[in-house]
Length: 133
Image 1 (cartoon, rainbow, N blue to C red):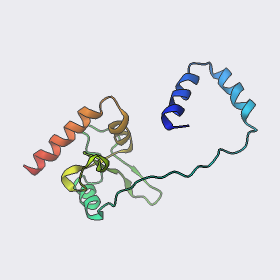
Image 2 (tube, rainbow, N blue to C red; image 1 turned 90 degrees about the vertical axis):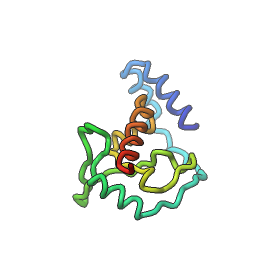
Image 3 (tube, helix red, strand yellow; image 1 turned 30 degrees about the vertical axis):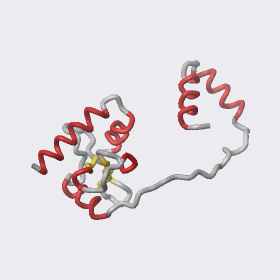
Image 4 (cartoon, rainbow, N blue to C red; image 1 turned 180 degrees about the vertical axis):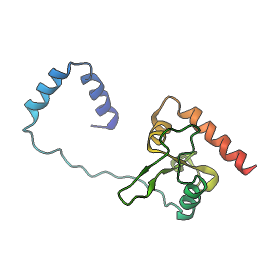
């Protein structure tokens, strides 16, 4: 089942009452483990220098204006932020510092899946271009 079909089925199920969902869950609980499948995935070689500069430039914090949760600490007590490409590598973007920003986990998910993704991307592009002007 593709991710899209999986999400569609989950949304369909969410229309039911929780009690119904729990009954169905406990009925199928004894089923065997999920099937494992091999999948092919393309990845891009990343430049560690770009990551380091992007994280340092942002002082290890989310670059979205007004972010309320700019980062969290890992088990190693290190600040955790994610480096995001404004133009994704898969869409022809470059792994360069003028194409990267630091984001907290929430804003990284939002910039990929949220209604405000285009506005967030444009605001971050303006921020980056103003810094480079």
